[in-house]
Length: 263
Ligand SMILES: [Zn+2]
Image 1 (cartoon, rainbow, N blue to C red):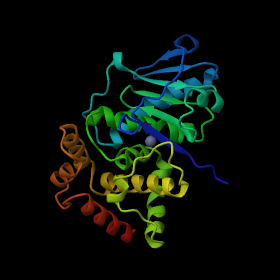
Image 2 (cartoon, helix red, strand yellow; image 1 turned 60 degrees about the horizontal axis):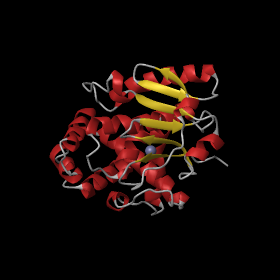
Image 3 (cartoon, rainbow, N blue to C red; image 1 turned 90 degrees about the horizontal axis):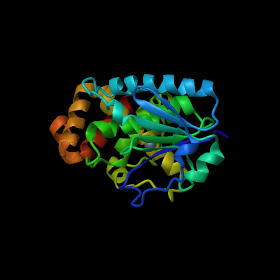
Image 4 (cartoon, rainbow, N blue to C red; image 1 turned 45 degrees about the vertical axis):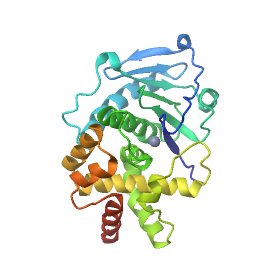
């Protein structure tokens, strides 16, 4: 059976109490790059070299594919930290609150925690978690956005998921399991989320609608939309002011569904 990979973002809105990580700084080796500091213990050096290369490449790619061309990124002193645990067991020992996740991003602190054998480390975990951090660096940590939007932007960085999502949502529409954006918005993902089918659909819908916003409606509007969010505009208001044809989230839902019908 295909292993399902869940990746999450932790924010104070989702987790009122910050998760405790019992990391002792001394046991970590440190590898400083331009935008990242990679911390690891016993992971092979050649793997760490790959992480160095991939993280810097994804950094450029994510800024570009979100249209954040003029975004200057973070400074040398504020580099993001990537913690590479030895394995699943080592990772879970220090992040056991989220047993189903293979990677986690703490966007505000710009920290990613994962392990080398996490399924899809280079294709999924790394770009996904970096997507979370870059989005939040751009829109700010005060901006109130639905979880599906954050996850959608992160999923957008996983190329295979990006292109597969429309099909999953089309199937959900056909078999009437589709969840409208309005209902998706009220859903808060947490470690108690146990309905696997629903979680899968949540991620697929998130990926599909963000893909629709960026690819069909264009980068320029997407960047303007993110700027409105950064300015502190409510999500629905920002949507209406940038995408003039949507009155609110229901308008977006309707346009997105119509688009999927034509695909
Ligand atoms: Zn995520």
